[in-house]
Amino acid sequence: MGRLLSKCAVWLHDGKQGTCYFEPANPSAANLDRDTRHHGRVEQNGPSAVHHAERAENFCIPRSPRAGWKLALPLLMIACGMLVECTMGPNYHRPVVNLPTNYRGQVSTSPPQPPTASLGNEKWWTIFRDPVLQQLIHAALKQNYDIRIAATRVLEEQAELRLTRSNQFPTVEASAGLLSERNPKINSFFPTYKVNTAELDPGVIWNLDFWGKYRRETEAARENVLETVWGRRAVIASVVADVASAYFQLRELDSALEISQRTLASRQASLRLTQVLAKYGSASLLDLRQSQELVDTAAETIPNFQQQIGQQEDLIRDLLGESPGPIPRGLPLAQQPAPPGVPAGLPSELLERRPDIREAEANLMAANADIGVAKADFFPNISLTAIGGLESFALNRFFSFASAGLYNISGSATQTIFQAGALRAGLELSQAQEQQMLLTYQQTIKTALQQVSDALIAYQKDREFLKQQELLTKAAADADRLSFVLYRQGGASYLQVLTSDTNYFAAELNLAQAQLNVRLALVQLYQALGGGWQP
Image 1 (cartoon, helix red, strand yellow):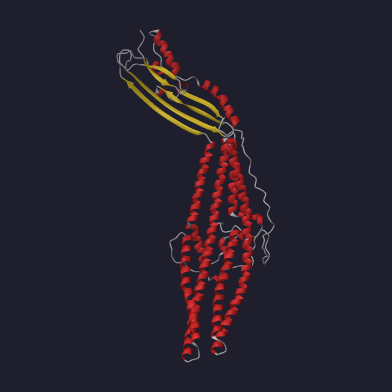
Image 2 (cartoon, rainbow, N blue to C red):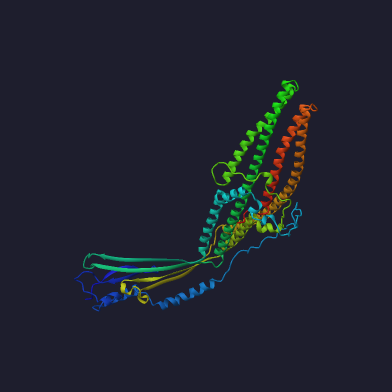
């Protein structure tokens, strides 16, 4: 009579179920030889025992690794052949754009400079030389919320790029397991048995990028990163221009307030003189009322300017990312640098320097790569799966591949047969988006050319206006002085004094506004030429 064995089900790695026979744990049962027990055999005491032992060996012990490599070799050769790049979709080429040779409104500089010299190539601190303004811009570059938000968008797209790029590489996984099981004796046919197993299974899954889908997705993700980088630079240039413009406006309001306070003091002195003249009959009641009118006109402007100054300071503090508060002052508005002529450079340089143009081009490049992704969806998805490992019922043979090794290598191809036109619609969608980005890119270039031309014209004409306003203000000051002298000597009516003083007050305010317009035009020209974002 053969020795009594216990039976258990074992699920093999290929999904089939096998049967193994083990030594009963019952002390009354015959003990199997240790070496025989490791190999799943029993000693010959009957044909049935030998038959079951051979079945256990066939199910539990894998075949030789040489046979596995013979089966895996064709799959490996196929995989190597598929590594040859085959990228779907068009490669990007920068669109041809008709550009003028010069900007409208561009004037020659003195001294003459090379054609490639441009105000947009200069660092912002060489344009805005007020030390206080430079400190404000430095603070804004560190603390402005728009810049910080734009920086987080760059980090977001960089992480998205790494996620997308990971699809090009295999996924390697591993699993390990230990099992120890003991069941009690049920009856003489199902004695007590014990099972101890160990398993280690590393695996590789690789979706082959044979059609270049993942490469195109990575290309699009890379362009999205570039788009956020240039977007951040556009925000930086905008913040620099906004801080400079707001600071110049603040200094103009300071000048206007100083003019109003000085005018009020002068008119109050004139009112006191008129009151003395009226007391002794040398001035009429009308003269007295007109003098009082001048005082009240100047006085009412002061609270208005003070209100605007406080609000302008809060605006600058907001650009700095700070709470509302006062702003330090630097050079007066009239002393802020404003060169007579600025080099504009060549229009073709805008394609490389302006952040919004580069941002639009990055979007176009990403849309172009998306066409390749949509085209690759028409072709099969090819993947390889390789799983290998060790499995044994004896730990002393666990690391012996010849006796405990197992493997599973497979390849698959999945092809979409019917999707009711979804693939074709996806391709048409990506092509339409690419055309939209192309038109946006061209529109951005045309808008940039217009902004540069407008800024050049504005800067030149504002400077001409400033010169005339300076002459007008000087003439108004002389007329105001002469009319008051004649009035005191009885050679002019107080109406002439009223008119001259009103004209002079308005001329001074207009002069401060003209000085501001020149500085604002310089800021707009600098930003239009793509300056301000350079580190």
